[in-house]
Image (cartoon, rainbow, N blue to C red; front, side, top):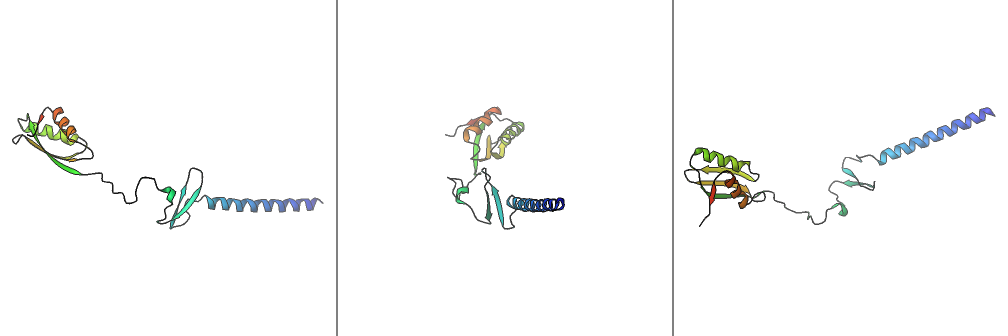
Amino acid sequence: MSVDRYVSLVYQSVILLLLGAVMGIRTADGSSLLKDKDGFTQQYENDETRTYEEDELMEEDVEPGFPDNADIEDEEIEEIVLKIKGMTCGRCEETLKTAFLACHGIKEASVSYKESEAIIKVNVFEVDYDEVVAVVNRAGFSVLEEE
């Protein structure tokens, strides 16, 4: 009887090992992040996993209010010509040019004390006219209003 008991234990152990191996392979296959070369897998907060083919998009994955063909411009350059009061030398030119270029949104600056003029190129989405005037004032000069 003792031999039958050991044989039964061996069979039970083999069955448990096989079951564990099958479950382990199934779990590893289900949690793989790389399903195949042509698709991708996305893990959701509720632990739901979906596999997508290339160019396939689920409707619920699209953010509302954002059209597929949205053309978002992040840069529109405009040239502004300013008449400046208070510049007397080349050092004034450099001071004002440095102040302009330190301002976020001003892409280029050309300053002439002889012409009492500054020509700047700005990104209209990042800086407005009042900010440009404030830069001039902080540098110690003033903008002559156009008549």
